[in-house]
Amino acid sequence: MFFQQIVNGIVVGSVYALTAMGATLVYGIMRILDISNAGAYALGAYISFFFLLQTGNPLVAVVMGVALTAVFGFIVQKFLYAPLMDKSPNVALIAGIGLFIFLQDFLRLVGGPQARELNFGAMLPSVRLPGLGLTLYGTWFLILGATAVLLLVLWYLLNRSTVGLAWRATAQDLETAKAMGINTNRVVAFNFILGYGFAAVAGILVGILYNSIYPMMGDVPAYKMLAVIVLGGLGNPLGTVLAALVIGMAETLIGGYVGFFLPRDAIAFVVLILILLWRPQGLLGRRRVS
Amino acid sequence: MYEQVVAINVGLAMLLAMSLNIITGFAGQPTLGHAAFYGIGAYTSALLTAKAGWPFFLALPAAGAMAALVGVLLGLFSVRVREDFLAVTTIGINFVVVAIFQYVQLFGASLGLAVPKPEFLGVRFGNTEILGLLILLNALVYLFMRHLPNSWLGLALGGVRNDEEAAASLGYNADHYKVFAFTIGTFIAGMTGSVYAHFMGFISSTDFAFPVSIGVLSMAVLGGLGSVTGPLIGALILTLAPEVFRFVSDYRMLVYGGLLVLMMRFQPQGLVGDDSYLQRLWTKIRGRREEGKANAG
Image: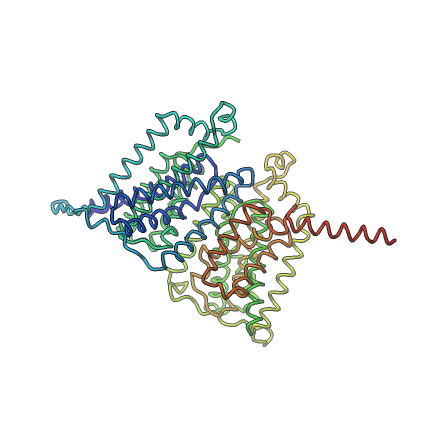
């Protein structure tokens, strides 16, 4: 039972890490809390579902879901966020909320209000380990594997490639990076393509894990993702992974053992508020010098 | 009567939008969980009148005080963390508060709470009396808002919003003013919650969920954060829109979301904020009229 809870917590934490990574990347460069990223999460799952219906090929479905959502990210960046960069951060925040509401309702009108099955999970086998009292589901391997691979690729991109160097320079100081000859517009565009692509992957994987997608599926991620990135210190990819695991574990263990009186989804925020009281800059955030 | 109910909803929305405007518009602190304070006021008032037998007119300020108590705590928290952290924390407070209402027996859990109709000097409050009370409260808050920008407090708040360090160098303790703005804003939201509870006669946790907070924020933003009349206009438009556009009710959220995006993209200062299209038009018309007068005289 205990091992089952631990593995459960790691799977939930991985899902949160993937879900929050898109918004972390966007925040890292743009310094805006991009709530519409949770809309991209649902959009990616729906596009993938559409292509699965049309072609019956899971690979095509996943690739199209991620690619088209990434294109959507580029468009959002170009026509919505880029012109708002010099305004107060509240403006971009509210624009993102508006876009999120719009996307959700758009998916409801196009795809119908009911939940749909995103059924590739049945193709994956489950493994039983009765000695440890543990059942490992095939979808878990998919999620843990995909998370590990994607995070490694991201780490490589950000830390070992020229694109990553430009990304980190722009994240540190956009103006100076521009003065040093970095094409920051391209970095920002790349950042959104990557961020929305990540959101789509997360949406598709969660759709497979629970074998269901629905128009409001971005609701819970929309705010939990914010809790995760804030806890991680905002815009720090490593912090996001750590915070996602902390929240995933806390939810599973507190929910499973202590029997907290509040529902699962409120635990994330209780953890967030408590940790922020102790470390106002987040788990891995640097203290701001004023 | 249908018109009365709509008018009451407008009155409640106006109070909420104005109270949010004090925190976000005047002091520049993002709040995405305003409905939590609205809910705290509503539940406080409901419990005090239904279970403790308090009269409504004592429960009303008590509801405001209870919300303000939590508001002070949030204000004290807000001075410790960055703006973006605060925005997310306020969302968190909204979720935690709704979860408490929904799961704790004292608050009726998922069944909600029944709230008695208020009575004053032997008059039982119907919708007409509630509407009267709302008009009175709106007038008081409006007058307060009208005078705030020109008072020492309003100037200090504006200074904190525009440049915290400059305000601090002039001897204004930014932290005090932020906490003050949270206290007043949440107090008004709490009182509004009390009126809502006694108007509805029944409350449940979903009445104060996160989408309500977004709705209130949208009203203030649509009209113009930081302007005195803006939030009133925003509240009026967004409360009446669903009534007027019933025929497109299926597309309501689509229109709502699209409207927020377009407003932020092309008119982020709100409909009547500084240098908005409407304000420029108004100055132009007034300028012409004055010119006309001068020519005639």
